[in-house]
Length: 116
Length: 208
Image (tube, rainbow over all chains, first blue to last red; front, side, top):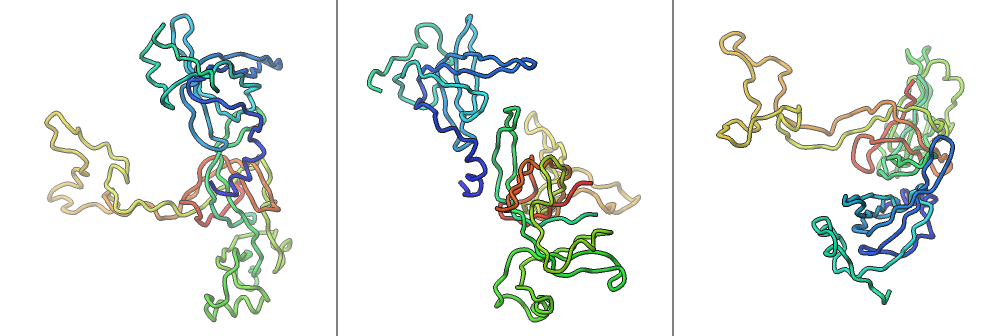
């Protein structure tokens, strides 16, 4: 991208982001402000997409809770994200795991990739 | 009226604000502008300052313009613009440099530019007509429809919305919030979109 644009956003880019990709199970710790109190909220799920570049990079995490599928899109460099914890590397053959939306239960499992 | 600034659109990106929200911003390379000429009520019939933006190689400047720059002792500039000014005229002198620091973060600005040319566009794109159904036996799709009555008035009224050239004309976007000012680098960030393609010449003025 443009050098000037890079310079503008440079200061806001995080440098301590762990390596993860589609298929990985992550725990995202989110800063939530309620009134003037701040607390952390965890969102655990499978990364089904990473897209964008630079400061506009986002990733989508999918989880199924109480039988209801739920997806959240996080800006990777958002200051609201306290920490990203990679819990498990998954073995998948594509970068966009939209097929998981059609699956449930045992079929929606992803094999662990122990070599990463 | 206060003085404005000339700049070039660099492109759009996003940044996070203090409340950690995503803010869409346009990056503008703004200034520096140099005051070329002061016009006053006495000599010109109105008060304004003329500013120049971006240097231009001397071989490209025609003689009348070269004379204009020479008498002021300036190197030739690519773009000249005037800003109407009332009392502030005394504050600026020929040769003064105007930078992006005339704007403050949080201030509202108007941005003027030439929009992207869309070519010859139909009435749906150009004027937002609804058009007809595509299917269900419809024989009316994207045409403008009736453009007037019969024998009375026996002509199409002036100003009737019809197909034609769209875009590539001046447009102003008002009340954009200034998000960041870096006068040293000449970088100005405003919230939201501004007219035109990347590299377009923009005029930035205070909104009030």
